[in-house]
Amino acid sequence: MGYEEEIFTVLKTHHLRLTKTRKALIEVFFRYEVPLSAQDISRELSKIQRAVNKTTVYRELERLREIGIIGAVQLGDRKQYYELALRRHHHHLICLRCAVVEDIDMDERALLGQEKRIQGEKHFTILRHSLEFFGLCKMCS
Amino acid sequence: MGYEEEIFTVLKTHHLRLTKTRKALIEVFFRYEVPLSAQDISRELSKIQRAVNKTTVYRELERLREIGIIGAVQLGDRKQYYELALRRHHHHLICLRCAVVEDIDMDERALLGQEKRIQGEKHFTILRHSLEFFGLCKMCS
DNA sequence: TGACAAACGCAACTCAGTTGCGTTAGAGTA
DNA sequence: TACTCTAACGCAACTGAGTTGCGTTTGTCA
Image (cartoon, rainbow over all chains, first blue to last red; front, side, top):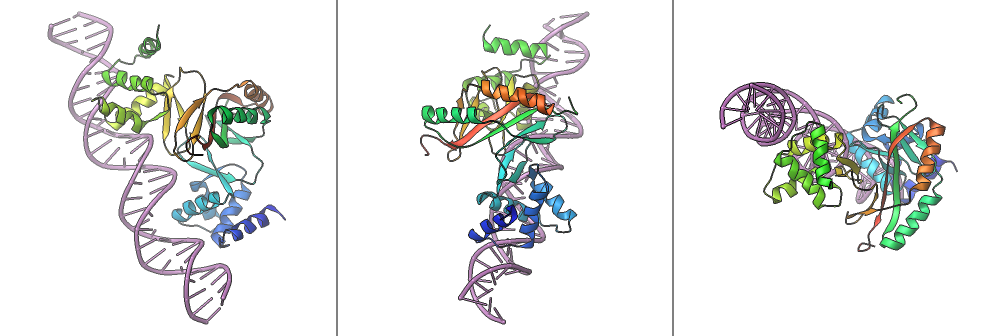
């Protein structure tokens, strides 16, 4: 079963309908590998003649986040970004000059060890972490 | 030379005046160890009978950030938070239920090693990173 | 194919932060 | 101490991201 089929199964188990808008919105996430804002989604849907109201975009993003299809990412500006959650856990490089975002994979064994230590010492249950690197990309530095 | 004197020296080298508002605002950061939003600052200044216009708060926070006295922190909501930059580099535990924020120190040697590797592989100059842990605090879990 | 709830659009709103512009007040100089 | 220059400040109006209420449309299942 491919990713798309898997997602449509998840939708069904949450009693979410397979509307054209929802399908098109999820497909936008498959077409782009970088985190997308509500504005990005709106723009892309308009491009393919499937323009939707911004309320719908915000509500849909929140619903898809709730059931775990997409995850929220902060990239240092005032917008909320989202990306497919089923992708391998990764982090981001964000260029402070041109704002380009690149994914990076990391060996997280040391980080997970630290999490374990913190949970014990602080009695804090860590559910997730966010790790972003800010600096200058190849072109801007 | 104590921290406060050091800051006032930094202000002088940037030709920034030592107004009552600026002094009071910086003192708020010294009184609280947690990251503060513009609203937090406004509220605290009002409490001590030094209420200032919100435009002034935003402009002042940006100026202090520019000259490196405070640093910006994202805590997962729509607000921008700031904390004294001269404090030892640290990270945050953020409770997803009650929103309490706690500082944590970490052994970052492994993380710095990864940064070095990324810089080499991706030709990206890393200037800073942000690492936040989200979960449930002692009281909420 | 009818009914019911999910999905949707629209307009008005909230909230954090910004801009333009005129006034006030530190701080160096005479 | 008074003068001057400009940083600092306040106010009102604005922007941009995201939210809410409510009425209408549309999938889905019996």
